[in-house]
Image 1 (spheres, rainbow, N blue to C red):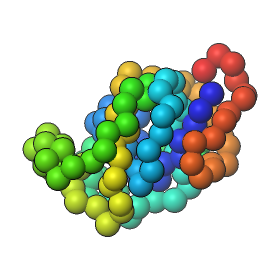
Image 2: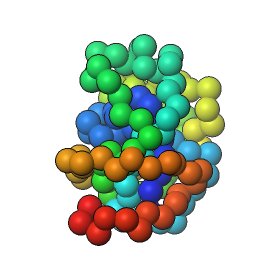
Image 3: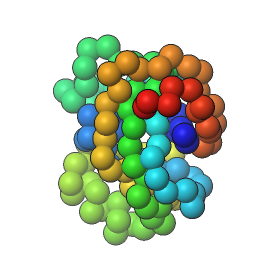
Length: 131
């Protein structure tokens, strides 16, 4: 199964269903089930700013949920404005390149997160078949 490693607090916001788009500088043609891996790194500014949405302890270095990647949208100024109207705190202007928005749906939180090191890009996990 495909996996995407995402820094915290963004991985947890996806897991909680609060963040429906993950931004990348690259597009993907992949569609389907996708595991979200909470990386070990933390965006401290994001964590501090979004603390009211987050649990006290953020999971790190583990696969925490499964989503469905349903679209990959070329980001426009108008699209970003729409998202910021939905939630200006979560979709605040970023220092990262927001070229593509990966639309995520159907969040399933894993009862038993899987400790594993993350990787760059989309990567494969061939572990537990019952995820």
